Amino acid sequence: MTTDCCPAHRPLTDLDSALELLLAQAVPVTGTEPVPLIAALGRVLAEPLVSPIAVPPWDNSAMDGYAVRTADLGAEGARLRVAQRIPAGRQGQALEPGTAARIFTGAPVPAGADAVVIQEVCAACSDADGDWVQVPAGIGRGANIRRAGEDLAPGTEVIPAGTRLQPQHLGLAASVGVAQLRVYRRLRVAIFASGDELVDPGQPLGPGQIYNSNRYTMGALVAALGCEVLDLGTVPDTLEATVAALREGAAASDLILASGGVSVGEEDHVKPAVERLGTLALWQIAMRPGKPLAFGQVAGTPFIGSPGNPVSLFVTACMFARPFILRRQGVAGDIRPQALMVKAGFDWPRPDKRRELARARLGPGPDGEPEVQVHPSRSAGVLSSVTWANGLAVIAEGRVLQPGDLLPFIPFNELLR
Image (tube, rainbow, N blue to C red; front, side, top):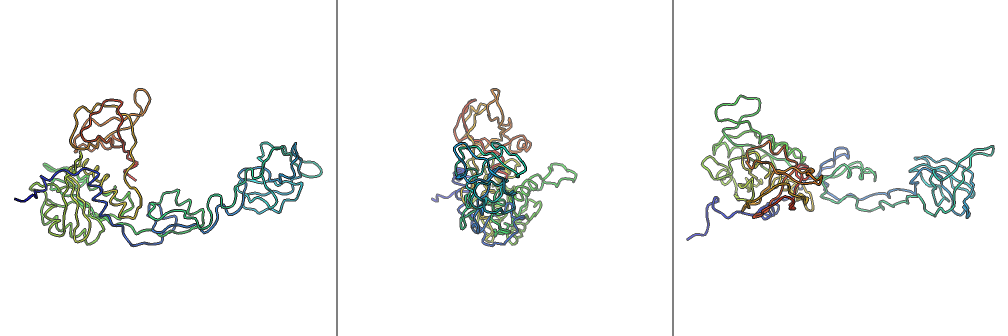
């Protein structure tokens, strides 16, 4: 007697194990290219960025004020002649004993000066002998001076390889004088949605037809991750059409994403189509929505198939396709979305054997404290619930909730960037 069983009767795989298995096969691309700094936003750094200079490159003033020699200040301060003016971008002369230099934020501190006194505590005046400033006592050496290399020393690793570059990274790279960065090439992702009932927006609906939202949801999610999108459109519910789409996607992309046709019904052709061209592990995930998930390879190209219901597609794309894409792009470290622990503003009296990723909205409760509400519909076909929500509430298997209980909440800004 065999212990194997058909995919529909295999035990459900928990979400964490499924994601671990998926990521274990997410091999980063190897191709790299140099890009100008201005075009590097969202790209993944392929090699560490090391600072060629010290930042700041010289001692500079942290404030507008007066550069002084603390040795010139007595117990009650000193009246000093203002011998020079040093704006940002100019180099002053060595400070002579008994003098001060008017200095501005960011300007190099002149040789001989060992403190900057902020202008608010000084009393400046002019007379026939020139400009003078009264400096108070109690000014310590090094006051209001940013030392050379205080931020970065030469040779410091500024940004590690595997970083998905954000605006702050570009600013930091610019601060060390780097004009271009070497990044991994863009991932090419082929997408298609299968279903005879699907019609593109702008076309009239016939009997039993619906508009193809999945094509646009998938394309936008992939584009937002900085991938090149190969849109294969809508694929009819036939084995031949599914095989043709998979073959085309495999030849031209690094990853194929599909929606619909991944279950085990008579009109679900993904499994036989993928197995004709490659191999497939058809997972049944212990999660709601999004139980069916297909993963495998087509002629060596990874394939992820999501359910056809639009909410299921959205959730599985966020929870599985997104981290898989990030890892294949070369993003290092923990790429799982970070959850907040928040108070429930709802009852959940009936535990489920599957983990629920409920469409949820975090906002102020009646007492003004943050709490999360869930959308009243659990239907995977109610796409409007995703625009109502601002995240996903994670309700563990077998859990019962009452208002005020804490639970994880994953904001969409963790899933859609």
